[in-house]
Length: 191
Image (cartoon, rainbow, N blue to C red; front, top):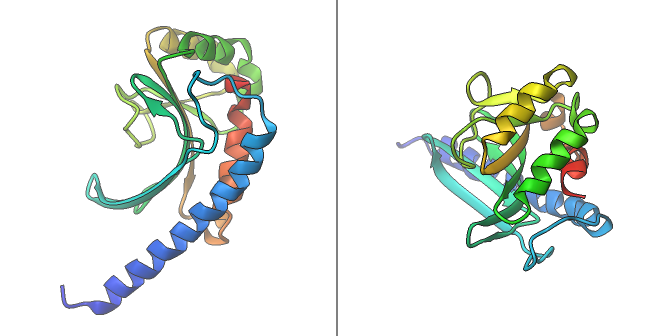
């Protein structure tokens, strides 16, 4: 508890991550502005939110929701999450209005989505951020029937793409580019 170096290093990292999330918002703003998204009626493409916390399963985290729409039982949000000790995750969160159409586009445009590192969350809520067996199902060209069967039983959809902190793109500060690439990869679902 007396290790001031640790706390200064943590504060410096949190500031750096906030800067990367701010740059991510700028990159995503270009993408959102040039896309015709299938959104809920009261969707505002300018809404965003920056959040930082200390305990996502005991680890600090920071995230950007942009675009952000949570209203009543509707969700149409793209989240870029930096989860210390785990990974960077970029996810499309969909629930409520338009969910049937979004699920149909995933199946109809499956091969546009497959093979891009995207994964379907298998968790019972939108708020689980673990990866791997039992948590996510990779969207690969050979899994169309399996993905369609999982989607048929879901009242919400979360499509996520992960980047480990050991990846060179993280080490060279390319979080905004990774988030932008992920947003482009999920566009067939929401356009």
